[in-house]
Length: 68
Image 1: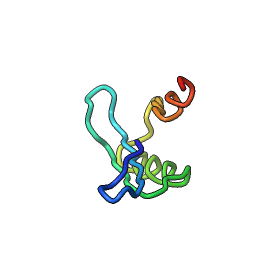
Image 2: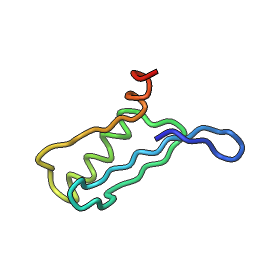
Image 3: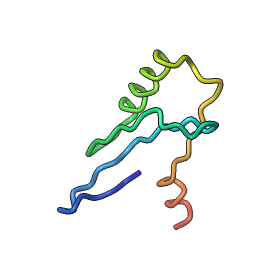
């Protein structure tokens, strides 16, 4: 998710949810998120909760670019 602060500085959030329970498993907020950040969060979750059967990505920014 891409947002801006009150002083117009951009930041992104990585939100990871359990699709079945809707439990929020992780939120990462940074000025710039890259693939290493995503891998770090997924690795931490795999250690804490085990490896999931599957991962579904809902990349809203990508969908908005295609629609535009």
